[in-house]
Length: 165
Image (cartoon, rainbow, N blue to C red; front, side, top):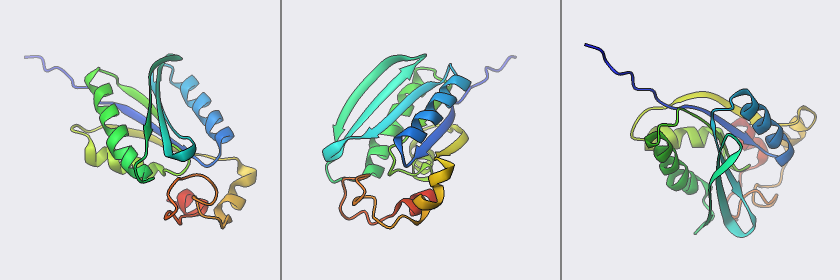
């Protein structure tokens, strides 16, 4: 009797503080794995989260969500997890997830592990940063809210805390 092999999804998670480093990391990851679905989350002004999904450089899906209370982790839990479930149901086997700057890869991976109905393999967690600005970013004192990375005034984390996480 032959058993069918269930193939799960292999995921690369990219986090960053600045758009230029993130852009370079996404370009490199997509070029290295052209069959992967590219799943981009970004935060716009006034707490608007945008989700775009690309497959082989073609836009498959685009949506905007207004954050009710500025909690990016809720967006990860309520948007990222169901979207990955849909991609799994569709038979996708590889994905590159690009997070907004204020979301750590650790938070996204934790939400995926807790929220998905089936296991996935996290192949890589990438922190995209420019080497010449890394130390300055680690010791940067303004909060993520003061720096414009999150719409939540109660988010007192610094960039360095996100890097370390």
